[in-house]
Image 1 (tube, helix red, strand yellow):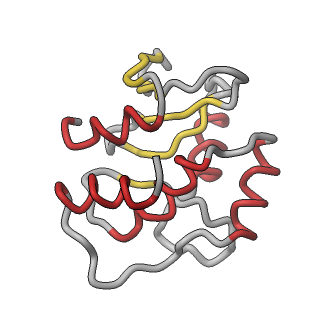
Image 2 (image 1 turned 90 degrees about the vertical axis):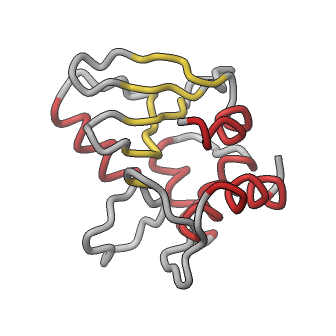
Amino acid sequence: MDKVEIENILSSHFPRRDTYKHLPSEEDWKAFEQYFGWKASPTFRAFMEILPMYYFEGGILQVVCKDGLRGEDTIIDAYETEEEIGEWDRNMIPFYDVGNGDFYCITKSKNDYHVYYVYHEDRYKEIVAESIEEWIKKLPDY
């Protein structure tokens, strides 16, 4: 799935922001991938680069790895916070904070391309999509 397809889905269901900031740079992606020891798929990268341009319910976590993101959570912040709380599956990479403590996550496990919904109460993981592409297509239904 390319940026045009992703943008078509998002623009047909979500209002576009007039201004936006903190679009991830190549430097941010390198730091992100180094931190997790995992290479993001082209679709995930495209989605996370387009996402800040639209209004969403809940909290889209930022890829940006720079200091100075006051009031904006990054994926790494959320990951480290959940690890500190305990019982977090280290293979789960949260990218969307639902707002009640639950997250949508991708996994850095090899050959596992599912998108998971992770419940904060008991860390139960539920597969909600077979891939990030399927999840993006179903996004308007969540």
